Length: 192
Image 1: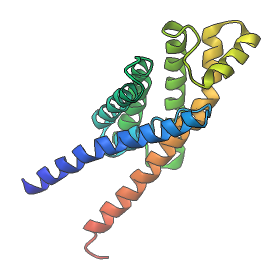
Image 2 (image 1 turned 90 degrees about the vertical axis):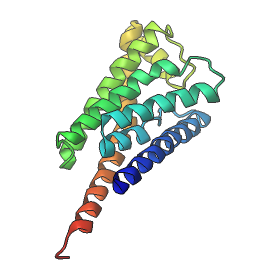
Image 3 (image 1 turned 180 degrees about the vertical axis):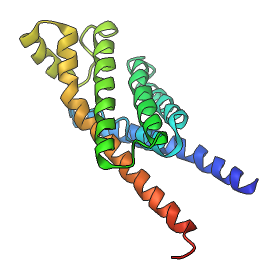
């Protein structure tokens, strides 16, 4: 019973810390006007270590944190859809053993990037009509000059950005999961 309570306390501390990591990295990213998002490393790590439910909690708290920081503008809240997709894909993949090898983590990174690019493009067009007040707007506008279709411009602009951004988040989650599993196995190794 004591161990269970201790584990629950660790999880309850981990969730806001992971959300804070997301917030700090994303705010730094926005401060430097980089065309990335950097809002999902904590979400991916939480989902990989503790499951999709914890990842979703981190995602929701992160997006709520953006709203609080930026004065409840409701510009950030819709993006929770992308964050939840990250939590679900990473969490389910980790639970099903698709994080055992690096090539599997690369595949998960591609799936997360594609899901975020599709959902992000949809949000960009439907809710924001092409202007999200993020540095990616300039890239979308450039693609729109070439393609002349806002959805496709938003999608093609987001694919390489999400491959880098979400690929980094998944790589960090994979690395931390591997370190955690090695450490856990050494704790229980009676021969070593």
